[in-house]
Image (cartoon, rainbow, N blue to C red):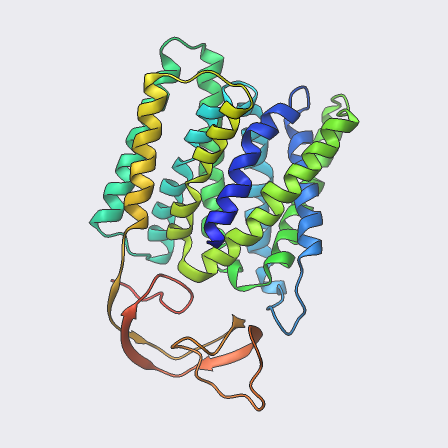
Length: 338
C-alpha cells in the first residue's frame, strides 16, 4: 500500500509537470519540483526516538542519489516531456521497474525467479512497442523526447538502487537532504543559464506538484523499499505510468493508437505478473547490528525493553543468529543469497 500510494502521487503529477512546465526551462522546472519536495521532507521529519538519523557516513550515498535522482533525471525528464505526449511519456516510465530490478539483482543479490524475469521481459516488450509507435508517423523530436524519458528512468533506477540502504533512515530527513541539494544545484544552473523566470502561477503549481508527487511520494517509496526491497517496490511503483496516462487523457490529450494500447496492456500484464510472485524457504540469519525503526510484533526483533515501547521506535540493536521458515522479501533482514 505504501508503494501504491507513492505510485498514485507520482503518476498523477507527470502530465501536470508537462502542463505547468510549458515555457519553463528544464533546470528551473527541476529546481521548483525539488524545492517543493524539500518542504515536504521538512514537514514529515520524525522524532529521533522513532526514526534513525542520517549519518556522516551516508553523505557519499546522499550525494550520489541527489546527482542521479534530483538533478540528472528530473532535468532530462522535464525536457523530454515537452517533446512528446504525456501518455506516451508516462508509459515509458514503466521501464524504471525493469532497470531497478536489474540493479537490485546486480548489486544486492535480490532474487529474480523465472516469473519475475518473464514480467520484466513483457514490460520491456511493451516499451519496444511504444518506441515503434513513436518512430512511425511521429517527428524525430518526438522520438528524442521519448529517448530522454528513457534516460530519466535509468537515472531514477540508479537512484532507487542507491537509496536502498538509506531506506533505513528517517525518510523525511532523507527526502529533505536529497531534495534540498537537488533544488540548490539546479537553481544555480538555471540562474547561470539565464533563462526567463517562470510565471508566478507556474512556479507555485510546480512547487505544489513537487511537494506531493516528489516529496510525499518519495517518503512513501522509501518506506515501501524498507519493507520489501528495491525490486518489488519498483514493480508496484510501475503502476504510476498508467495513472499518469489516464490523467493525461482526462486533461484532454487524444493521441491514443493501437500501438499505444498494446504497449499499455503488455506493461500492465508484466507488472501484475511480477506482483503475484511469492517466496518462502528455510533461511539462516547471521548475527547483525544496526539501527532502524522497528516494532516487536515480527519474527526478528526479539530483544527486550523495560518498559516495552509502544509502536515503532529506533535504536541500535543486535540480532542473534537464528534459522526459520516463512514467506519473506529482500528487506534489511533478508539479504541472503540464493
